[in-house]
Image 1 (cartoon, one colour):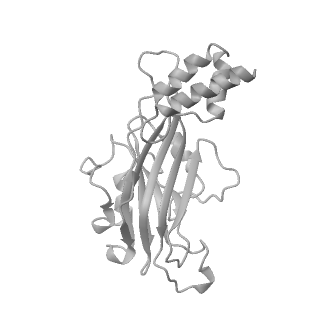
Image 2 (tube, rainbow, N blue to C red):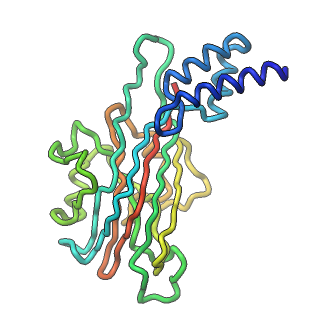
Image 3 (cartoon, one colour):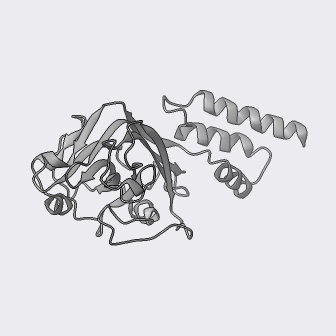
Length: 259
């Protein structure tokens, strides 16, 4: 058994060594490891092992563009910046096979940011209470979303042209569309990194507010379940009400899927 485990570990390591720049296995890596393991285990056990170890391909995009989403500089007092947009979700069916398909497993967002560094409500300092500087995820579905959006231009200030309701109408599907990812700590001048992961499974311990003005709070599993081939995920940097600002320094989106 020890020799077999050592051999399996070597196979996984070799797969990781050939991974793309994002540090995760490619689809071919997963195929190669699965085929190698067939010499030792049935396919059902192999898939359980790979899923348990989250040995999944990953679509990743990141940015270190520094922007300020300033609520006071917008039409309706609500700043909305497109900070990042993911690569398209690949087709479900895998070319050349009738027995396997791609399945989205989880989405991870990472953000480094802070708010304006002050507040008129001292009881909220150092907490997330009453924060109006936050991040939201919206699905970009090409069949119904505006084709004029330049997806390769870097951060894009929607709030300079559109009010919040108009922006929602630009992305009508899925309906509802828009999920709260993370708020900033109130009245902090120091940037803080947050990492948020959503899976297809509902978080029973999450505080849920489907009517939150910051996006459907605690319902990130809806986004994972809603993703269709060709969809892209937009990381939106937001702030609302006079004086509020979202200072963003870095961000990333990772979409993990099994094959």
